[in-house]
Length: 272
View 1: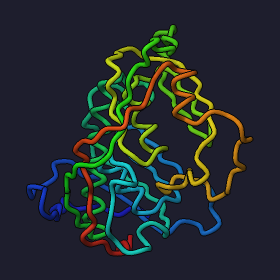
View 2: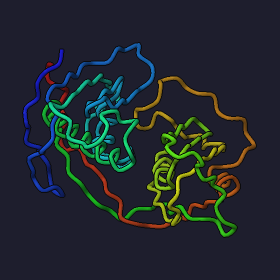
View 3: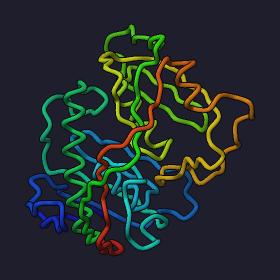
């Protein structure tokens, strides 16, 4: 059952200015996921809606605040283990352009993503009584740079090609992807922020194949399918070597400011 949501005050701690969110979901349903469900899905619905399947609150939070799992701390154990199904829709379309997310331009897609994040933050504050605060700390990061022999990325030749980035354990395949998006993807795999310092401005097609660390877990942010995947055959390159050999890119270890989200309060969701 979909329930109307009110314009809830976003309760926030130090690091945020208290504010009244301007965008909310008009109706929303949150219920426990099927315990036998496998896989997690996030789907943008036409008109600014959002469907999330078999997803823990911790992963919802990383999506709402556009951060990685390693940037989130605090909260009880259930925040990362109990899974929910979410269906939410706004009362009106606020982004300009096509209602279908896949048909939007890059700028329209970015605007829609920001709007959905704001709506989701308001929904989490209301239904999970979520209270967080932001902390910025100097932490280890990686800088993604071009190797001395030059990048080996292939320019996307077909105009209008829809962006896609698929990550499996030991393999990433991208189409029409800017290097900033590649850096974000690498950040999730390496457990450390990756900052794009390549200076490259195009969109690229690529395949990156490597042997992941033994401890690498594709379910780190709650997006895994609950099934342990077999490890790739040993003897292949590490992700650091593969980036240089296959894409002509390199990761440099540096230090820089990293934004962290600290959970001060979270309650199991209210009834729909």
